[in-house]
Length: 223
Ligand SMILES: CC(C)(COP(=O)(O)OP(=O)(O)OC[C@H]1O[C@@H](n2cnc3c(N)ncnc32)[C@H](O)[C@@H]1OP(=O)(O)O)[C@@H](O)C(=O)NCCC(=O)NCCS
Image (tube, rainbow, N blue to C red; front, top):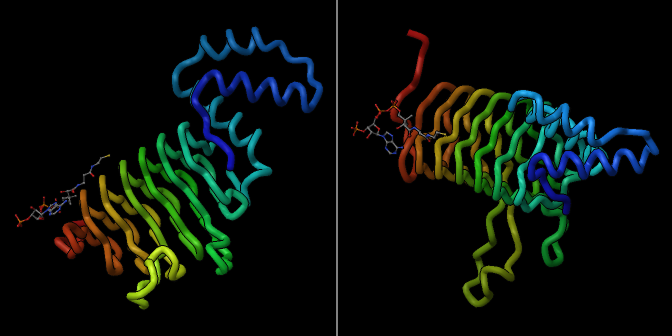
């Protein structure tokens, strides 16, 4: 498990590590002064780029400028393939599971460029979750491809194993605050999932869905 970024202090820690690892002569005091002088966006870019530089070998892939804010629970990073400028806000749990009791899985989390995921998100997978480019997930969104098997009433649910169905969220979709995307669901291109929705079925391209369970309330078009 690796951790996310907490901000400026982490940049200094990371730079210190780089300095030691590469035996570079770096004037950290000068870098600190430069960092403080720059605008917020530039400082954020420095934080993000430092993070990907330091951690890229721990991920299947992590594109430049992607980052995770602390505190975070991040597990199975070698199964995660992230594009450029993917941002995760605080308190996320992102977990790729390759083993559960005696079951073995080959999980893969694929996230496209410029995906932004709000605070307190929960992403768990044991097979496949694909989040295409330019998707926005608001705060407290759950996306999972896992369900517990519940067939045997005499065995605790926890001890019956897991089943999986892949999930896909297509490019440009917007997932509203407090929503849940359940196993097997595909959310279409540029679709909108209203706040607080539980999505149990596929969402067509350009549709707006809302409610529990989520139903189509509108098909958006360019008129
Ligand atoms: C779904 C949403 C995008 C509105 O879409 P819209 O096409 O403009 O829909 P409308 O506001 O015209 O509402 C249409 C119907 O859906 C209902 N509805 C809208 N949003 C809903 C929701 N989240 N859950 C349940 N029903 C909802 C409305 O009450 C209305 O019902 P009615 O016809 O019985 O009166 C918006 O309500 C929403 O949920 N936005 C997400 C906000 C969010 O997560 N922000 C986080 C920012 S980081």
